[in-house]
Length: 245
Image (tube, rainbow, N blue to C red):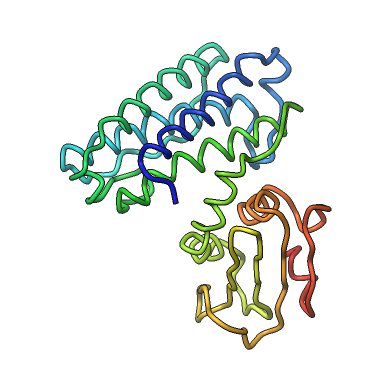
């Protein structure tokens, strides 16, 4: 897990790299489709800029003791110049808001657009938001790809808390298998529990699909950025075909 200083530094690094890539795009680059379904590069970058502003507002509210979540950022319909302005102003606002977090705020809760979270958890969300969206952008336009290892390793550590919510978005129906994700930074087993999913200890009762690889590969797979056919992943077990589901 990152402490506040590291979370602020890595957030700024990832968001500034995203801005640098966006600033170098030609007209065709802005209309390129991304691996975020339904979003072009322009929409992805507009979302990132709006999200930075809304996250900054959430941290400001936390410091003021107000826990009403800000509105969701969406993907504003803007020109490329307006998107770049939004990205730059959002990055500055978010960095300033993270810099203003004090010990009382860190010990409390922070309202973000999707809910109110402990601040120690909330400071990680911008890290992942801009690291993954920077990689989404780089993947779309053929720029340098790859998650930094500090982000990938922290995501593996962080993922057990996110996994049940993410798995709950899957199509409804009776699950016939469980999953085990294994990377150098950690491992977890995810099995169905009633109408949702849970991280479990030990061996699951259902057939197991084991998915392993580097921290980066497992993090990208876990967040839906690469598929089971990616050569960086090793898929084994009696339910190996479940990795494609």
